[in-house]
Length: 441
Image (cartoon, rainbow, N blue to C red):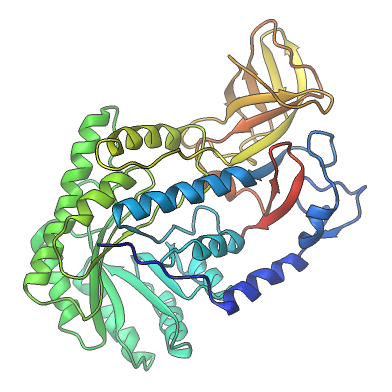
């Protein structure tokens, strides 16, 4: 099965996103000094701003443009090799500019987890969404039905894992006067996991209820494998494969009963850590018309810790099946200043929990720049504690770090770093500002 590619993005999407260029960047945005006149976002690349020279206040979050291009290119090759399709999770970045980039790259659509995220996507004209969550809140159902009713070109797929959820979705569709079925996927779960049907029979009961209601359409089967993790990597791989096989088993059983609506049968899982396994196991479902949707949200920026390790494991597994040259590289970094060297083996940076995620570990020290010089790698410098606005570094006694130096840090989890920034600056490899992206958390 070849990957389905849709794109480029519709003109309306492009126009709405382009309007963000008029955003005024001023001293209410982190990093922008009050001594500098406000500037339009679309003008930033013409101002000659140099982060290592000290043109902006620190800390700042940056996206390295060449790394973004590399990661987008790498995933395109992976999708072409495996026949999977991408519906990247918007919760990672909540940046319409990056959504547009992904749609132009051939994404099927954007995945969201909440109606707030759906509304942001609709504000910027995203034409197709996968709401990878249960749609049972009355207000949320009303929003989705209203969006579908007012725009015949808009597509959304949501999840169901209970008969009550199916009933509420059907009632909302009828109450909203929707003239086309509300499209749902059955969600498969596992014991101790999150949402999702526990067991094949429950999943098929939900599938039958969707198929039997004229206000609804069953269009696929979905699961989320991301909560399967332990200290035993090989055991996790086996557990993920078993879970994905159960998703396939439900899909085959539903297909055998003729429950799916006409059109592609969507088979979807998360895929940020186990994208190779998702593409392989779901891609071999044998279900007629199956289309595999990966919801990987972190590939574009990658990271220097949790997904870096997962990517290395995935590439080792991939080597036996597909030739996918190159690799993902971290694109999201933070720059912080050394505030103090209070002890020989300690340095304090002006960056903390308000600036960087630490749910999967602290940020990773990469390099330093002194007096505007090109970055020099730093070994054996470790973030050992984060306060709200400070990072404690354990450093060698002979560390070259001095008060006023700039430290470059990689991040351990993109999702919980993006949400701390309204604006992230895009930069070249010399940390000269090329532009910026906005977020809408």
